[in-house]
Image (cartoon, rainbow, N blue to C red; front, side, top):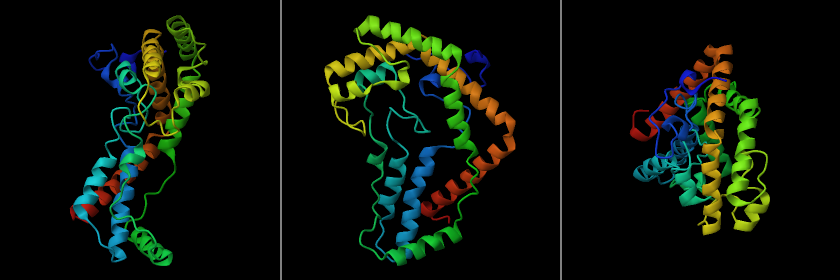
Length: 266
């Protein structure tokens, strides 16, 4: 197993829970290069352009505000929309999130009841002027495959067993095979956790989530999984780095164009 120091991701100063900040924020080789948040935010810029094309009233300051807010999903998410789970987060949110990403999707230019044909025509014009980058799916494929591979590494499975033992000792429950399976369906029903993970957690939910998060750290599961996922991403990137970098470059170009729609440079 690769050590954190040899993972290619700089090891940051440990935070209050003892985790390096890069692990706490689940930073991976691809995280800083392209962000899912930016991709989602672009939808607002696209709708702004379409609204202008259709001659609908638009509110640029509100659009910029919505675009910016879309990129700030809260402390329980990282820049790549990976759920974060630490004792600090668990102690405040339980198994819920600081916000659902949809909370930031309000679009001041959303048009209801408009002509479908007219809207489609404007959207086609948008694509002609701002074509989407050629998409091979390399980045998303690497992220998905690396995550799946990391979960199955022997050292990660061993750490999951230690987590099970820790959580059983701390709470008396029978945990699932992996922390990634928490909360179980039974716990979701018990704590009345909605599908979008919103709402205010009860004291019992917070107590269990806090014990869960602490056991993930003390068992070594958090650090071991992060190290394995970093190594898996690096291995997959190295198979064809040019394809990955070209895809990221194309998406960054499109991100800049969408930002330009809102600051008047496009």
